[in-house]
Every structure is written in C-alpha cells, then in structure tokens.
Length: 257
Image (cartoon, rainbow, N blue to C red; front, side, top):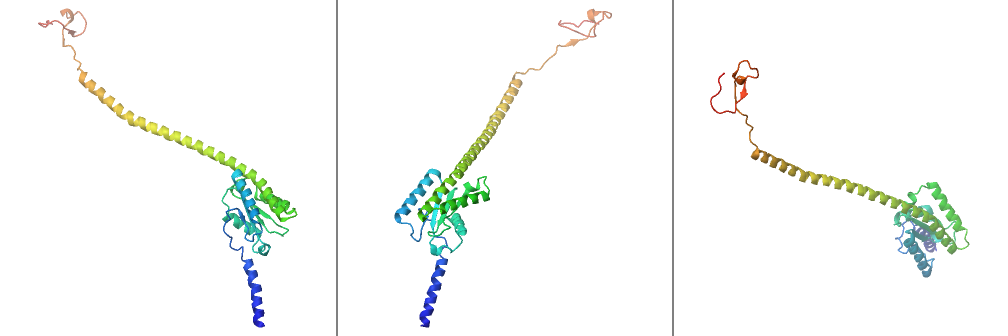
C-alpha cells in the first residue's frame, strides 16, 4: 500500500510540473503563423487562419502570429513574458501583431504590437499600451472563443495598418534622401574626374605649346643690329649746333672735323 501511495504521489506531482515547464522553452516558429500544440483548432480552421494571415502579409506587409495556449498551461509563464518571447524569436517583419489566446479564459485573448513600424511612430509607449488594452477589452466582450479570436485579429489588423503606412512613407522619404545624396555625390565625383582629366590633358598640351613656341622663336629669331655711327659736327661747322654725332650713309672718306 505504501508503495502504491508513493507512486500515485509521484505521478500527481510530476505531471503538473511537466505542464508548468511546457512553455518555458518556446516551440519552433510555425510556418502557417498559427501555433496550436493542443490542436484546439481543427485542420480546416488552421487552413482558414493561414489564408487570412498570408493575405494580410501579401496585401499590407503586416505579419500576424497566433498562439493557442491550453488552459492547463495558461499559468506556465506570464502572458506578457510569452508575448515578448514570441516577439524576440518569431517576428520577421517590421510590422507585426501577436495574439495569445487561452480558450475558456475570461481575460483572453492578449495581444502585442511590435516591430520597427511601431518604434518609428510618434506615439508614446503609454499610448501604444492604451491601444493594446482597448483591443483586448473589445475582443474579450465576445461570447465565444472563436469570436474573441476573430475580433482580436480584425481589431489588431485595423490598428496596425496606419503604422505600416506611416513606415512606408518614412521609407520612401529615406529612399529619396539616399537618391538625392547619391546624385550629389556622383556629381561631385564627376566634376573631380573632369578636373583631373582636364589637368591631365591640359598640362602636357600647354608644355608642348610652350616648347613649340620656344622652338619657333629660336629658329626664326634674328639678332638686332644698329647702324654704325661716326662722330662729326653738323655740316662740318663747329658752331652749327646740334649733337656731337650724326649718321653717315655715305661710303668713303670720313668727313674732317
């Protein structure tokens, strides 16, 4: 009896502990965007959700992730911690919405908006948190778990669309700035290259022209010679005035003074 009682105690203690540790390690990212290890959703429902998630991603570049947490594992880790772990390990896009839903729980689903599109907005963290609370409260008013999950998805999508649009506009502005900066840099580089080309061709041409000019000057330059002069009194008169010398163009005997 003591052995049977001991085995029962071990079983009762062990299985809850395994349940508590289930979400301590996040499972691999679901390719469909829906993680449901408990198979709460049917195959058709999973297929339908995958189609909606894929369509949203294709139309608006918004990523949506849904995780179904069984009630037995609802208290494994705080939901806020689970949402942050999903954001850190599963999110691949700049604008993402995460839904964690525990069927049968009154305060479910819980949501999170994450990504660079949320960080780039002018809204404060308090304002973002208020948006999330409103989405959760709105979806939790529904009467069934299916309606709650659908309401959370639609409300989260509508809230994420403006963030994605704002990020798109910001990305366009950044791209235009990059293009303008590239054009300016290209123009500056082109001007520098043209200057270098001009210098590269201009200097040799200038030196060649200078050398050719010097060659022509040396070849055709004749030394300047002056006519010879002979000093004499003007008209051979010592009192006729005038300078002390005059040009003589007459060959022969020099005139006497």
